[in-house]
Each structure stands twice: as C-alpha cells, then as structure tokens.
Amino acid sequence: MKSMEEMIQAAQQAAETIQKQMSETQNKLDQLEVEGLAGGGLVKIRCSAKGRVIGVSIDDSLMQPGEKPILEDLIAAAYNDARVKADSVANEELAKAQQGMGLPPGFKLPF
Figure (cartoon, rainbow, N blue to C red):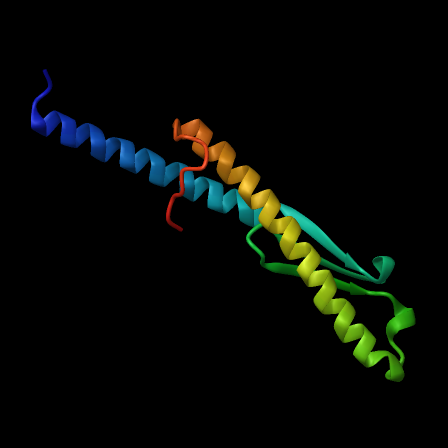
C-alpha cells in the first residue's frame, strides 16, 4: 500500500498535468477562428473561440449615412453569430481535453 506522502505526491502531479492540459486548451481556443455573418454576409466578424474579436468586414454598400442604424444592428448580429460559433468550438475543444484527461463527460472544470 502506498504511503500517504506518495498518494499526495501523485495527486499533486495529476493536478499539475490537468492544469497544464487546460492551459494548452485555452491557448488553442485563442488560436481557433470563427466567422459571424449578418445581412447575408454584408457584415462579417472574425473571433477567436475565446470570443476575442480579430476583424470586422463591412460591405461598401452599407456605408451610406442613412444606413447607420441598420449597420449598427448588423454588426451586433454578426458578433452574436460569431460568439455562438465560438462557444460551440470552445465546448468541443474542452470536451476533447477532458476526455484526454480521463474525466467523465459533463464534468465541469472551473475557469
């Protein structure tokens, strides 16, 4: 039977391994990109899977002074679309990471 010290040491090593894997997953999420669209593609927003906005593209046809309220709504809609996609990608990657750690499906890790 293992001594208490050996069991504590093994638990600490396991915790360090999980922390390292989660950190790697978080870094990967910041590298994965999704694109949110609105107005049939007239407004596009690229985000990382962590939700960081990388770029915004607005079709020239929306650059009219009277179109400002429409443009504002389309930007918000495109961001929300990108955010939903980012959350989906993030959840998939976290599930893969948890599976690799041997954690049961649905186990919630604090972030």
